Length: 320
Image (cartoon, rainbow, N blue to C red; front, top):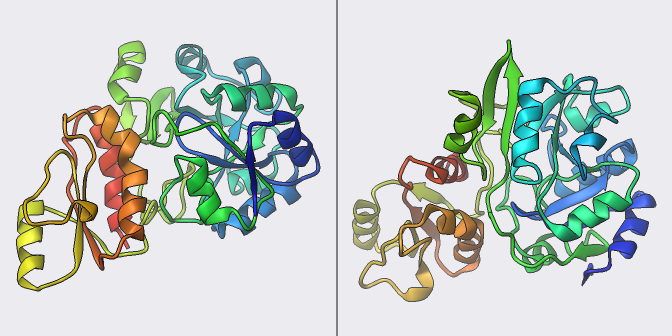
């Protein structure tokens, strides 16, 4: 079983030996390995049971170190990095040959970010290689936002979990790149579009459900519970399931519904705070998935700010 602790030196030694370590970030926990070691990267795919056509994100400690493994850093994207790193922003940049094809799924751009977590930043600063680190969960399942989530899912498969507490943001990073000098958002995430647009003006948002993704985390069915996950009007869904006498749980934005046991319903933010809802999303999905209901009923958030990114995850959880 994986050891859980705060020992950066132990994590560093394991990573230098080609082993995998779960690391905390402000978004979710990552399953990290040496990004420049193709065998370590292959081990990430094997451990997660992740399709090899889904690219990975490289994590490093500073803007300056990005130059070690990218060919160029366009000014528009560098400006975003200077304003939002460390933070929940991933940039797609032209890669050097030093980055294994397996990291990028053979694409000519690599996804890079500087995470905002003191433990992981200290670890990255101590290493002479970047870390490839998708979310530390079996592929397609709910992303982990605490060490306990990682231990429950991958504890038997990895030697160490770096304990950084509960993730502050709780949603994966926003992924941004350039197409013909236009800034394009490939994945909605923890950095709001409005915040980006304040700095660079209007951006293009791609419809990114894909079986051949250009960036990490864009497969149509993703972040999914094992139970059926149904999105819609909650009052209508609840009425239909009561009539059908089905055993269901409820995931709402802010409301609690009479007649449903407290353990079978979770409101992501009773105060209607989208940042709180984002932070609670994956833990709530996981709790309901581990409960005794047969199906999970859920609703979309307001389509604004972080609500757009939460809705992206909800739709893909329901896609299967």
